Amino acid sequence: MGISPIQLLIVLVIVVLIFGGKRLRTLGSDLGSAIKGFKNEMKSEEETSQPQQRVSYEQRDDGVIDGEVTSKDKTV
Image (tube, rainbow, N blue to C red):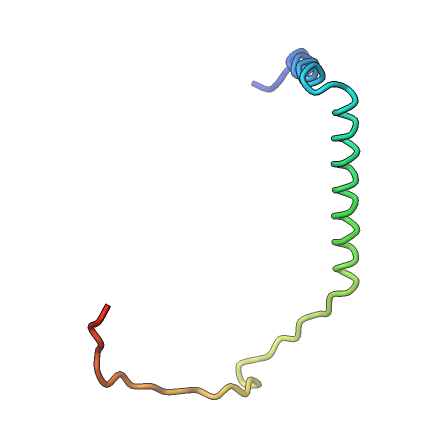
């Protein structure tokens, strides 16, 4: 149960009647330039990104803080 070519043609005619040819052309060019800009930014991000260094648990120099609850505060 897909969309037949006749149904696509009807939808296309309705869209052209609603928006007009000039407006569709500008929408298409704006969409194309947005996609092109997105691709360029993704490419530049891949080139400039640095590989992340993984630090094992043993190599970390974080101090562990132990705590103890002495009283429970019941104020809300």
